[in-house]
Length: 102
Image (cartoon, rainbow, N blue to C red):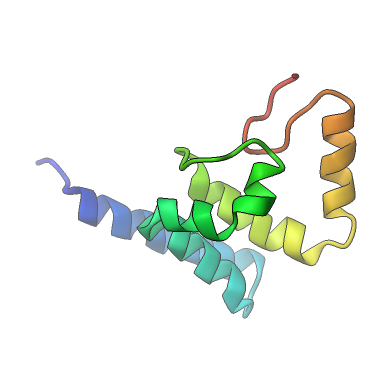
């Protein structure tokens, strides 16, 4: 049996929403970011173009829901997050969108 894209997408959305609730209980903004990344990746990239652009993401990528989850939790709620990402990049590494030495 072949799963439809819609059922696969809804399963992915449920999984990421559950993760968001486990990692950021009661923080609705995290769940909303993840939902947008799953349901409409192009709209997510457009809405968060500035912060994604800082890490070289200019169009939807396969890991976008994970990026949305990490951005929602880490970047938005950990005071030193942006500084850590800047230091990683300064030392030749990209963030979690493309974890590799540059």
